[in-house]
Length: 170
Image (cartoon, rainbow, N blue to C red; front, side):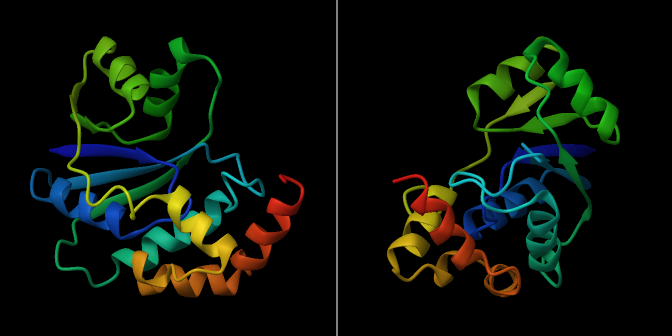
């Protein structure tokens, strides 16, 4: 069985890794959809789809629940009635969708797909919003993400980008 998980992964963190591990207990293959792939360089979406893909791919190297997985950027289409068919056009076939987003769940249910809410892992700390907030305020954030993500954020100068983007947001 193949499952689909869609997230923005801004950035990919240990909560995401935990969810993928739980999904891996149920399916043979995992499709990881990078949602809102066209968005980057803004306060809520500072990283590009390519940067997020690197974060995910490098974080999954050597994990003990390695499965066959596909990482696929998915642009928004801004039309809910077309979105599921858009996702299907970009991905291999899948049997089950994992999402905590009420709209995503509703759209896939209406399309006849089995939908499950993945277990969340300490959502208060392990959220992209919290990690971006900590980076911006100079607080410790590195322990909330896999080491590979720390390296990717360093490589792309993500801290500087988040700080510069916030200047225009104040």
